[in-house]
Image 1 (tube, helix red, strand yellow):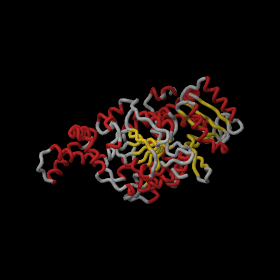
Image 2 (cartoon, helix red, strand yellow):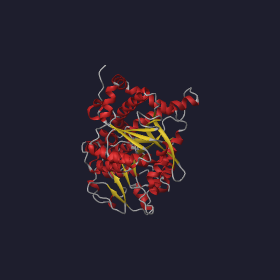
Image 3 (cartoon, rainbow, N blue to C red):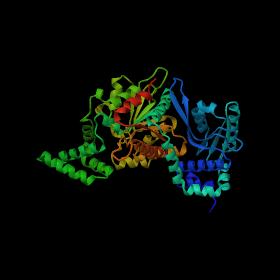
Image 4 (cartoon, rainbow, N blue to C red):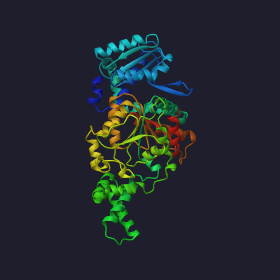
Length: 489
C-alpha cells in the first residue's frame, strides 16, 4: 500500500473538503493515542456559565484526557487549516472560560509555521504558562505522523466517508434534547450581540411572513401581467388562467430562465409590474411580527451599536417601513457608490431594490436587480462586485445570522464556502425548520427520535462545511421569540 503524504491532502491539490481533512487529522491523532494506550474524545463540549448565570458551551475538535506524548493532560486538541494570529486570538477568546478544566492545548495547523509565527506562538506560550500549557504542530509534524503510520493513513483516506458518518452517528446518539442544545447556542449568540458583532442576513421567508409572494407566486403574478398587457383584450378569467397555467408548465424547472422571459416580455413596464405584484397582498405593519421583531432588535442601545447592519436579499422596503415607524435612523444601500453613514443603520439590498414608493429613493435604475440569469451571472462572475464585497466583509468581521433563508441559493453558498475555506471556525448561524417533526411510520418514539436526531445532525454537518451552525425550530411562528432571546439585554 502506498505511503500517504499529508501533502496530497492539501485543499489546493485535492478534492477533499475541510471536513475530510479535519477528520483525517483527528483520526490519525486518535490512532497515535491508541498506540500510547491513551483516551481520545472527538468533538468534545465543555459547558460554561456566563455572567448572567446562563449556560453556554465551548466545543473542541477533540480532548485527550491523559495528554499526548509528553504533554500533560487533560489536553484540548484543535485543528486549524491555516495559521493566522487572528485564529489564535479568536480561539483564546472563545476557549478562555474553559481553560481551568485543562492542563494543555495542542494546536495543529495544516500549513507550515514560519519563523515569525513560531516567535509569536512561543511568546504566547510563555505569557499563558501559569494558566495553561500550549504546544504546536504544523504541516511537517502531520507529514511525519502520516509517514510513520502510513498503512493506517491509507485506510483512513480510503474510508474517509465512513469515518465522517460514524462520528456523526456517535454525536447524534448522544443528543438528549435538541432544544437544550439550541438554547446554549442562543446564549452564545446573545453574547455576540452584546459585543456588537451581529449582522442579520434576511431572506424571502421574512417577506413571505409579511404577506408578500414567494418566488413562484411572484413569477405567476408577472405572467398574468404579461397576458393582460400583451395579449388582445376579450379574454375571460378562465381563458387567462388557462394561458397562465400553460406558461407555468412550459417554464417549470427553470426559474431563472422564466424570470428572463418575463423581464423581456414586460420591457419598460417591468419595474412597475414587479412593484405592483410585490405589495398587493401585504399585511398591515402590526401583523408583520417577524420584521417588526428584527426592527425592534435594531434599535440603538446606549453606549452600544446593537445590530451592526442588515443584509437583505429581498426587493421590498418593508424593513425600512418598520424602522421608520420606530423612529430608527437607517440608510438603504442598493447600488455601487452608496456609503454607510455613521449614525444610521445600513440596510444593504444586495439583490436589488423595488421600494413601495419609488419616488422616495434616488437612482433606483442603477441598482442591480438580481431577478433573471443576467443578474445572477453578474454576481457569480464578478467577485469584486459591491454586493459580493459587502457580504464577504460581514462574514469576515462579524457574526452573521441568516433568517428566512433556506441556504440553497448557489451564489450565497459559494460565498460562504469560499469564506469557510479561508477562515477556520463556524461562527455564523442559520435559522431552519426541522424537517422531521412527527412520524407516520411504525416507529416507536425512541426509534423516531434517534432517526430524527441523526438526520438533522447530518444536515448540520452539511452547513458546517459552509461555516454555519443551525438553530432549529419546529414552526415559523417561533422565529420572533428566538430573535428576541438572541437580542435581549
